[in-house]
Image 1 (cartoon, one colour):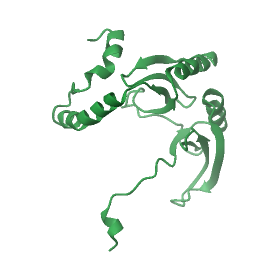
Image 2 (image 1 turned 180 degrees about the horizontal axis):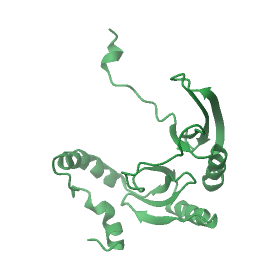
Image 3 (image 1 turned 45 degrees about the vertical axis):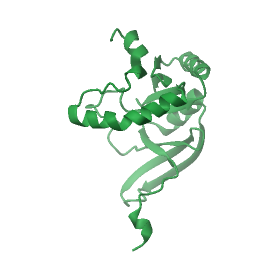
Image 4 (image 1 turned 30 degrees about the horizontal axis):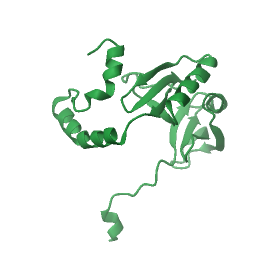
Length: 190
């Protein structure tokens, strides 16, 4: 047996993340117009390569920058696209980085100029975000990092403690309360 089999997989990053879309052309155009993503590749088959099942599809790939690829499948023979109704709409989302708070505010202005409702910016302590929905109902987040090296180090230090406490109590641990202090005040929570 190879020694490699005894070690965890060594990942080189995310190759692509794939989601379903209602209309591949509309989705490609929207992500190009709203977020400036280049459309790079399409796969289309009548049979699924991994299973052999008959299920015609269009699989489109968009460049999200820095070697990150976002992909979508249009599946015309499947039931209409839905979402997990047991999960709140704010939970499942696609989050993309922007370079600064200024870029975040400029992005908000651009997205709103296209008639899209934007929520935020929301202060998350170490980054600020805006939120909006794509034409498929996927929530999109743009985030600008604002944290310090000390803040990131402290968050890494308390992460295992928080996970252990959460696993036992299912109540929000308070080790990193400072992260959402401003957001709580904004919503009238202390």
